[in-house]
Structures are given as structure tokens and as C-alpha cells.
Amino acid sequence: MLIILDRDGVINRYHGEYICSVEEWLPIASSIEAIARLTRAGHQVAVATNQSGIARGFYDHLILNAMHAQLERLVESLGGRVDCIVYCPHHPDEDCRCRKPRTGLLEDIRDRLGLSDLHDAIMVGDSRKDLEAGLSAGCKAAALVRTGNGRRTEKELQTAPLGQVTVWRNLAAFVDDLLDEDDDGPSVTR
Ligand SMILES: [Mg+2]
Ligand SMILES: [Zn+2]
Image (tube, rainbow, N blue to C red):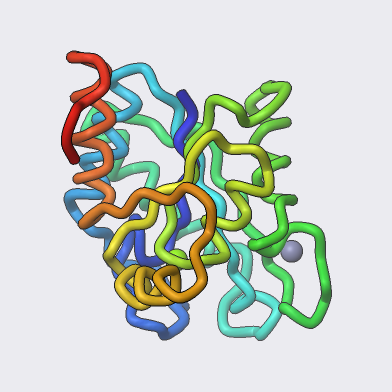
């Protein structure tokens, strides 16, 4: 299976401010471990992240790539792998094809991994736009984590529901359940 992750608030801490340097990019330790566990179990992991801070001039592609190299190093140090990282560098006003909730980033992941569709993919995010992008792009499920923006998003979804979305304490809890299903078949309770 392919698991597509939002970055800020899912993989690393996020409190609403732009993350402008490698020093400010603070991984959630259990998320790094969860990514490694997923790929060690044979799943693929991709990251799709909106980074309008580039268009706003807060940081550049080199700095962003350094953050992502750090992410890859941490996951690889645990025997895992990140298969693909894509980002949207545009300002919301640019009306690009890739900024979530649009589906361009997810289509790029599909193409880079040589898939014909995303029917065996799950999108995991902490914001409504992540879940919308995943469902619009044809992912079979969308999962909300309560880290980062997630608690606020969970409240929003109560007033304006969005298809089939499961809710998890964090990425590690989502992965625990997914890998448990791999072993035992579908779980009866959540
Ligand atoms: Mg996020
Ligand atoms: Zn874009």
C-alpha cells in the first residue's frame, strides 16, 4: 500500500508558524519511527506538502531540501525509507495545480512511483485540505491525525463532514492499526 503523508503537523511539530530553517524543523519522534515501520513492512511512503513560505520568501528550495534530507536521514537510520517527497512552492494567489486541496502533488507522486492510480493509497493529514486532496485524487481513504492542526480540523469536520475520514491520536497510532491489520486481518474495534 502507498501511504501519502502531509508534512507539517504529521511528521514534524507544527504550531501555525512557518518552519523556515532546518533548526526549526522538529520531528515527532514517534512519526519518524512509524514511517520506518511502514516501509520495513513493505509499504511505500510519500510526502506531499504545501510550502508557500517559498513564494513568500521565508526560505528557499535549498533550505527546504535540507529539511527533507534530514527527514530521510532520520528514517533511514531506523532502517526505513521515504520513497518520494513533493512540495508546492506557490503562493495561494497563484492558483497553481499543486497546492492542496488540489490534486497536483498527489498526481506527481502517482507518476513518480509509476502507479496508474491511487486506489491503493491512503492520505494522512492534519488539515482539511490534505484530506480533500486525497479523496479528490482517488485515494481509498483519508486519515486525520490530532497532532499539529488536527484537533481544530476535527472540530471543523463535525460541522462540515467530509466523506470517510478516520481520526487518530497521531501518525504512530494510525500505523499501529494498519500494521496490526496486516497481521491479523481487519480489526473489529478502533
Ligand atoms: Mg499539516
Ligand atoms: Zn503549487
